[in-house]
Image 1: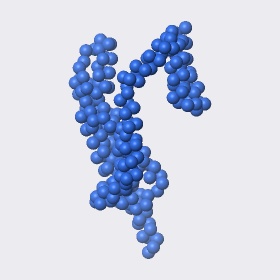
Image 2 (image 1 turned 180 degrees about the vertical axis):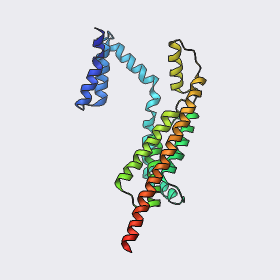
Image 3 (image 1 turned 90 degrees about the vertical axis):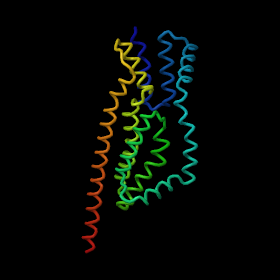
Image 4 (image 1 turned 120 degrees about the horizontal axis):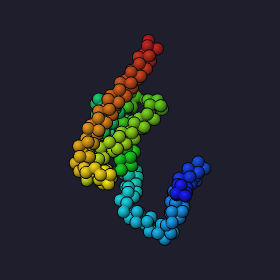
Length: 233
């Protein structure tokens, strides 16, 4: 009855459907899976503890949250907005394109950063909103939400498509070891060489999308301005 080992998936699905606590559901699913697979409770605790220690760097982003909160309270967002207001010609789309380049370069040089918490939320999103309001004045709530979504998406695109452009990245090492276990001998540099065109293609797509976004905003708000002037006359 090997299929019984899949009971953990069923527990997760049921837990998510009934909106139980996510961490509790995942831990219970892992424990049940271990027990039906013949792993004792103490062996399960050992595996969980070892996995936590091996991946403890993942939790380091929690240390940045108090720092970001203090920085925002001290006026980080307001200062970022003031800087954008003094830059002529900057638009939300141009800002996103610049950040995309920065994010991919960070991946290439293995500069690990929690972009959503350290850059997007306190800096990129308010700066993009300021750029849009400086150029067009007040914008609609729909466009405000689109700018928020595009801020987060830019971070995700840059991180996802450029994370394996560093030769010692964890993803590169994982792919290399997996391919070797399947009988294919490749080196990490082969993975990097294959990833670079993907990262550049993603950059081009994002930049083109941002240009189209700026043009759409220009048409929408320039037309609105013309209609207002026509109504006054």
